[in-house]
Image (cartoon, rainbow, N blue to C red; front, top):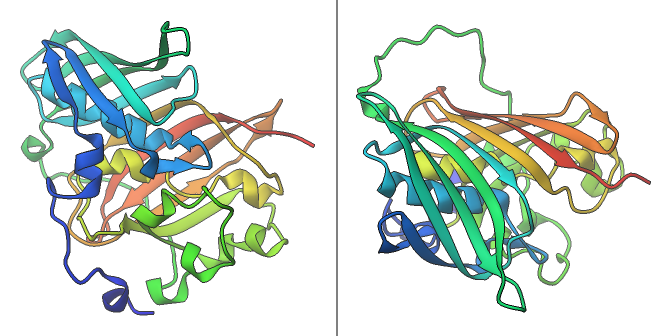
Length: 286
């Protein structure tokens, strides 16, 4: 299938997309926002960590005087559930080029007690104001053309309830990182894919927060199975992405004591490194 053939007939735009609607927060009071976390961004019963980070990122964009996340670090404290949630933000410092804030996402348990799900510290600026000066040794990942890569629709019938987020993504995996799906994981701890939103919405700084956490875990290519919950995730957004699909490459070099790191790079259609991330995650051994 060609890239043109896989594109939606009517492309959504930034601000008018399911991603925008499902990450939209409603300001209840200064620094306090309500949201109904969508079940559409779950894997089995777990709400995707990148989607949750985008929700917090949107609230901080409203609370801070600068529009774009430059760096955002999240600690995932308890598992979030689809349904009502509250985001509380605090402005830590504001400056001419950067402002810093913190935010927490909270839900209520069956007894009505408030439970903190995620805590974030972030610095925001204006990506459009950055100088056009790039000095790098980084190179885009070598991924075959989209029509030579594979998505969830190319595989067997998914486990019921596991494909909610897959239905909202255009995710085409590099065949070289698909050994786990065929019962022959490579052992390399690598995952590479073309990434976009299924409705054709172009990427922006907030959707980059989703992109770094949307691929299957590298643990699968290490021969491990099951849920790989994020403990901590830090994302650096480097510039606004050009229109078109993104390329995402994730690597793990060290698994020890039941924890691994995932280092991600996100490249746009203009061959620019637009985001980087590192996360620490738990894995189930044995």
